[in-house]
Amino acid sequence: MNSKSVTYTLQPGGSISGRIRVPGDKSVSHRAIMLGALAEGSTEVSGFLEGEDSLATLQAFRAMGVQIAGPEQGRLSIQGVGMHGLQAAEQALDMGNSGTAMRLMTGLLAAQSFSSVLSGDASLSKRPMKRITEPLRTMGAAIELEQGEFAPIRISPAQLRAIDYQMPVASAQVKSCLLLAAMYAKGRSVIHEPAPCRDHTERMLRGFGYEIEVQGSSVSLSGGGKLHATNIEVPADISSAAFFMVAASITPGSDILLEHVGINPTRIGVINILRAMGADIEYVREYEAGGEPVADIQVRYAQLQGIDIPQDQVPLAIDEFPVLFIAAACAKGSTRLSGAEELRVKESDRIQAMADGLAVLGVRHEVQPDGIIIHQSEFGGGEIDSLGDHRIAMSFAIAALRARQAIIIHDCKNVDTSFPGFAGLASKSGIRLQVQ
Image (cartoon, rainbow, N blue to C red; front, side):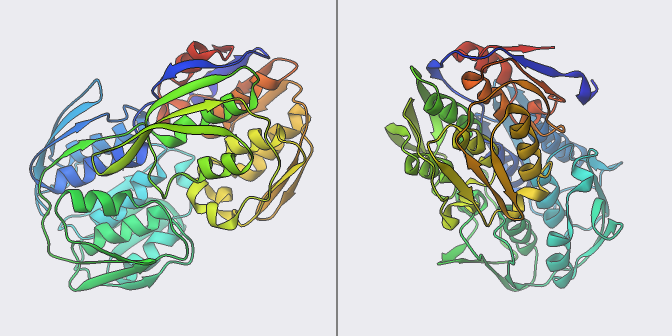
């Protein structure tokens, strides 16, 4: 299906309520496939996200000789081949729309004894890849990029050596890429973060029995270890839950319970920011699943206040900012975001894409090179181009709850890459959404 052929039409108004569980965490799902494939023994996964991004990762490992049963209702059984058991794929490995998969896979494949090619869709092929290839080349990797910057990525066999690397930008994808490569490198690698970013890879490596050390802002491990099969329970994705957190927070009469949501401390920037704005968000039940902290989260309507978003929260909420921009437009006063240049190199330039959509709806704002200032405004209606970016599409769907007129959102097919079933769950909870 051509991505341009899916359009969301949203009628204004409504409120949301009920009890829902959003799909499994995409970041954890990708990593469960990768580490399960490299482990010795059979790894069982539950709660796996059956979206296009994580299914692309699954298919890539099947193409490299890994037997994977499922997914069936989020359950997988992965027969690990060990650290050196992967086989060359017969053709390029298609990562679809997933920057996470492409960047992590590059680190993993850089150390294999065979050549590989990683490709992606038109959007992924425009995203910067030098941020991973430059440190990987320092480790000895043999990698070629299209026009020196972009996918497809061509990887040749190489012997890797350890690295001591200061990341210029806080990026879990870069950190994880280098950690996966470091498992094959000679010596002990140390990765230094400029600011905390998500630590799913570190947690999962421990779960698979690989020795890894975290000291302050540095992560280190030695090459030559083994992974041992384990069971992984994937929590619901906080990035997906964020759309319903904002929906309930901005809409009078709303009260929703979000079940089994991952609340990893490196991922809860969206909750911290919404609470700073005055949101009524409560952890009803906290527990642990598969090495990740999890909670059922109750969210009720509250009048939000504009804030200056704390710099230390930016890396912890980088994927949730599009929907936080919707919250900001409903908050009294003004909300300022800075230090978020990373938003410009996501599936789209998310600062500009959101600014363009906010302008259509009549929201007053000022775009900055590294962020945006958003002033409290009423949403009108109109037609919005999501640019094929799933988070842009879903964010403007949430805006319809406070709109005066209908909102039509074009190019929404890629919502399935990260949140299959979004339209149905949104409609069930009270959002007036139709799909054409």
